[in-house]
Length: 420
Image (cartoon, rainbow, N blue to C red):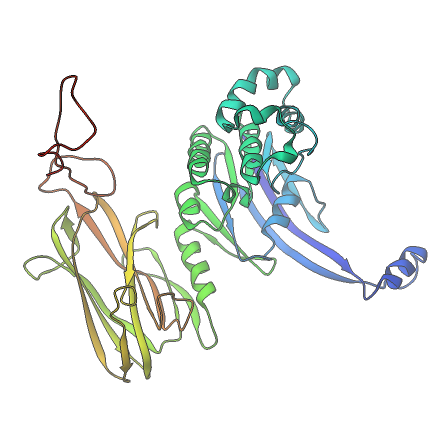
């Protein structure tokens, strides 16, 4: 089983004012240093248990890729250390370790040996590698003629051909087509279920929340926060929206989950609730039933343009549906201080049974990155139950009408009665 233990890890690079200073320091090593240290990572501490999946997030330049290089040993730390047990397979920079003039097959052998596979083992695994990569005859062509997506396909196929104790993946999986991204994450989930320890860097909120047990937020080279993936991703998104005179805070809500709230406070969510067909405030609704979401907003300052948006998310924080009044061409103009507005959104609750939450945003446009008045995650938590329909699987109620044709004349073309 694979474990990762990171202790007081730091990485700094030397910065020289000019080339002459670099040369002088090299010629006179005992003289006064002529450089300054630029820290890209400092005081990083965390532990990954066997079989645990941990996601690392942060804005560009936060130090995510540098951290993975230190963990995999492709870069040396300035301070601290990393202790790893188990066989490691890593996908860092796209094409790292590939020689452009060698064929894909030759590079597969070299990459396989770098992660501890023997030549005979790679030969035995090669049909599986080729089948998963799906690059056809290009496997025997030089890698320099590959697209970035083809390189990623081959690298991922080799790295996961035999279950590693630890799999470390950088943003490389964001390259390529959606089909292979889905295929890759299916394999990652299978590896996780088999006991592989995962360390994943991604900006994909859905990927982090659906795969990982825990998330780590890096900010300016330091570990800013770690914990439940949904709470960390909510905090990260709030950080992105933060502007002058805004705040980001997290607090435990009445339902026990960590709630993230950010914004300038010029407008606020005063109340939010779901109502059934009888106009009753409810916390549980039936699959497919007529439901109304009502949100009460209070303006605390003059608002030239007010847009309300909401997002329904499942228990993992994955988005089910979201919209806002700008997309519906219904923004409000010139809202005055103290004014209260009640929004009503009526829709059938076509979700599968389970627990869901609603995030709400008040802003001046269709994106909360501009004039974020308030962003409130987990503003409402509710349950969907199947009380009146036959059993079905999935997160969405898409009840079909069914037409069945039998015989030699059966065709995919619609009949007069099909699709009614």
